Length: 107
Length: 118
Image (cartoon, rainbow over all chains, first blue to last red; front, side):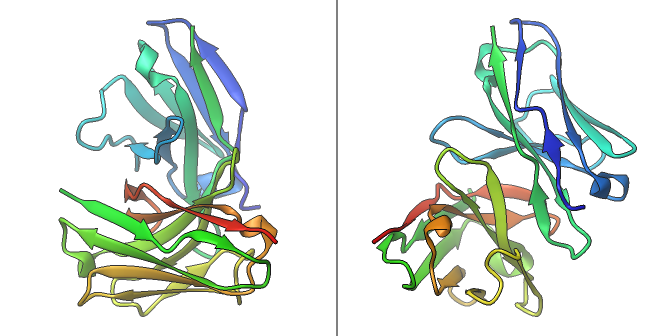
């Protein structure tokens, strides 16, 4: 299957840690990337590869992977981290696929 | 700085056609794979298509295969998406995106809205 499944919503207290997961068969072979999207804005890449952050992304964002599950962890969540988060990878034909998305609420 | 500016969106009737364009600047366009990614109102992201740096390879989502055609003009630093036989379910914001690793997008445009409605 080329589907990537995410929990629809999670919440985290300000300053605490939250982990967002992404499950799919393709993740056994390919790394996931993670994108943050705020309302009315284009997505922003936050993690790619094994655990790489683009320039300008705070180090409170980290990625990991095990088996068919990839995870994005926000350590010390800030108010500005409230957003939708999408994972992505590729399917067997090489086409990009996105996860179903997770809405993160910072309390 | 990298800029991707989409144009060509608008209202079109079911069965109609539309051509989206993306003007790229701030990087060597001919070095990168490029993609179109869409997002229906209130929904998640869907990868529509991508094209290799030299146009030698393209790939499409099953939902648009046979109806959409991606192309590029490296001399004009431009990416295109020809959309034919449009359906209501094609209504979405269409993003132009630069791929650093084929299916890893490191830069996005601001998007152009396509509405398919009678």
